[in-house]
Image (cartoon, rainbow, N blue to C red; front, side):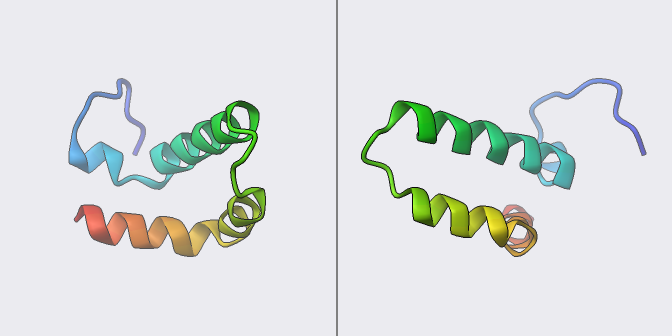
Length: 61
């Protein structure tokens, strides 16, 4: 199912394609604007992104 427009709702927020884009944007921002961030933890979370996103989806529902 393809959504024409994104609008703020829990249903859309719990979709994988929205969460993946949000994670990419967040990780990029943290890497480039926070010089004391834990980049190893960011890399570890990125490697385990399917499990991380499944946990987020279950918390949102």
